[in-house]
Image (cartoon, rainbow, N blue to C red; front, side, top):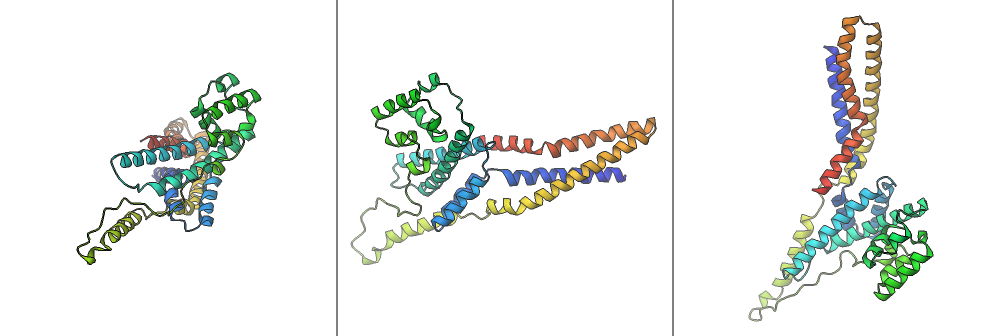
Length: 303
């Protein structure tokens, strides 16, 4: 009975570790974008960028690029659809600018990792076939100093003929953040305003007040009620403690089962073997939780 309770406690710890691990390591794009939008000055924005950058490694850089590129594309598609329907302005401007700033920082990190590796995956023959769009996509995440002189000269010809100044600057070694500049956050919104009624002076400020109220409504609705970055930071220590406890329990239970298996009779060994099944499953969960998390996050990002 006591052994059954011990195994149940171990299983609960393992499940808790998995849940906290998902919370701590998930790439919460929306929360970061909202925090960046709410930043009141460049210093706060820079701090947010530094926080994201501190979590980027060579191993997860592709996941960060994929997550923010998908978010950026989704926002641009929403804006294009809205403007195509006849809207005079877009409520997505601040989100797009924030996403762009973060994405460009991530791209510059990818370029740094590319430079550190000292090599590129594509051959010169493949690179020489790139069109201007493909050249731009390559330069956004790779360091141009790794290109051969032949490829660089050919790309310069293609870009010059298309008057692609920004991509030429990338080819010359400038960072993504230096090349691309976006409309500052909280920039004044421009509306296509209809004429006001002149028959009654009480209507003079009505339209402007309506626009202000609409902006306030959108701002209030976009406030982040749960800051996932704070949540992740607070639970980081809890995760480490629970993980250590779980590993400790796994080791202790393994030793107990091993000793019992050695000292038990034939019938006792058969019972221990059955208990080993639960033990092995628990160990697989605790040591394979990161892999499980990665699969879950990947699936959710594609939804």
